[in-house]
Image (cartoon, rainbow, N blue to C red; front, side, top):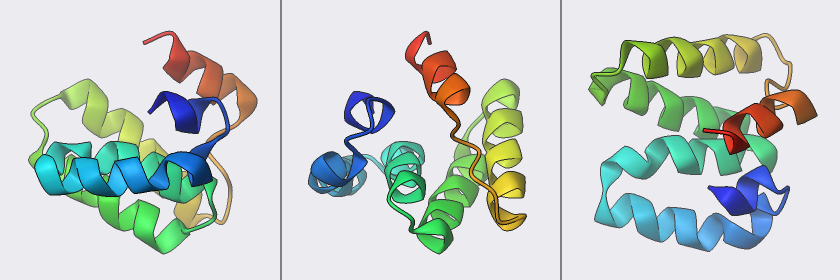
Length: 88
């Protein structure tokens, strides 16, 4: 996750792929990396899988907002959003 947040998503994609194999809950992290590397359909797929499986209402709402923004053809991961995610 931190590699993606520090704008090195392409460099850490291999780790995201491995993480998903080990734990499907990691799809939200791979979705972030996919979004940051321009794979919007893959990001949406991962985010929707996260939304379908998480029990976190806050997490669902946040990730759904990313999906909505991506579907609108925009990038939800502004510098401000990335900084906000780093603080979590």
